[in-house]
Image 1: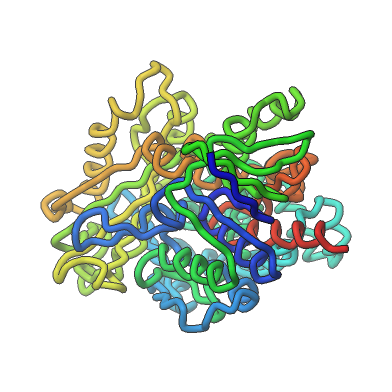
Image 2: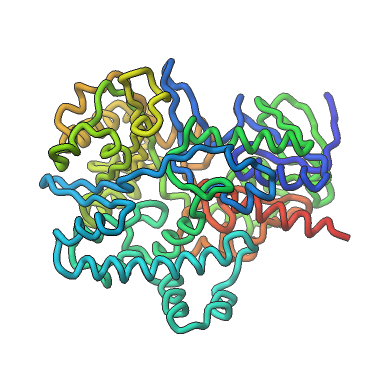
Length: 517
């Protein structure tokens, strides 16, 4: 049995683990990152799933890590090439209608005006709300997790305070209903992520906390990334190594070693023991505390709190290679066949549709009509597929982590893939004929591939009771854990779970502060 000593050991080479590692290595600490997979990146990777076709396997939208993190870590301004999609979103409806959002204010307003005279005024009101909400969330994004009272003290201006009250209690749907009259316009701006339906309390905070990371790199650009999302973690890995850190892949952790109440290292699946002064887990909280630690090191009440963490927003990812651009019925004239019109398209035609999908998933049933968020990266970066071909990726929400009849996803995968194809075909006749290859990653597949419990890609559902100083659980929101020397830096910690590097940054600062004389 071999033994090595490291000052800092980080479990998981996803983007937050790499950001945390780079900061600590840059400060002169001896840092080792161990990764279970044969590659770095976690859920932020680019993979050649089919020869000649390079997909962003999981995360697929670039809007972080942003300027501060990239400048701090010495990431060059030209490290990333980001295409800003235009249109920014296309929302489809079964009656052949659509809502198209553009980068240009005038074009978006002209589109919204089709749905009523008040929708343009409502859009401007909503934009003002968004600016205030994002500013509030930005103020606590790269900081320790604040309490609601701390935010209220900070944001006393009456207009800001009113927005903060909404963030701390209302749903995004309530905001949209105050601004817009049209159900179609409302659903276009509605989110369907980790709160369940957009009328759930707290969905407003989720929307704008995610939006607080506005762009990637020193240039702060958001959109579709050349070379896919794996470019982010490759650059971060380069910075870890340049700062003196070490990364080992194919090194799955069997357990975190605790000696006299303190984390003192890990044992790998190979049996190798790696000792460390501190262990930082980029794995999700449930995996960290319930699988990598012996329960005897934690109190029963703490273990119960971890068990009760909501990880209900379970995702699927669908891939296809195409020999043609999808021709959506809602498009016409020059729009048809234009790849950029198919680059960011969403199918969730109503709040009722969203509610049904969530209810079926929570009952452990195969969703009848899932929410589908589609991307066509080759509309902007054609080199990611052979000439004349396209890569098609879609997040599909929601799918149950477990079925009520105790069957597994292995028994439902083909039926779910066919259902997704049928739905897209209903909006884009001829789509099936353009498909040359498909693959569906179910929640089971995603958990197997990434280790994320229940395929909860944010590690912890972003619900109101699991945000700010309650993320991942009340009392343990500042990256420390009940085990001395064991820290959390993953997406299940403040501020949120998308690719921003925020949790990794914040954890690194907390660790450095703890080491200061």
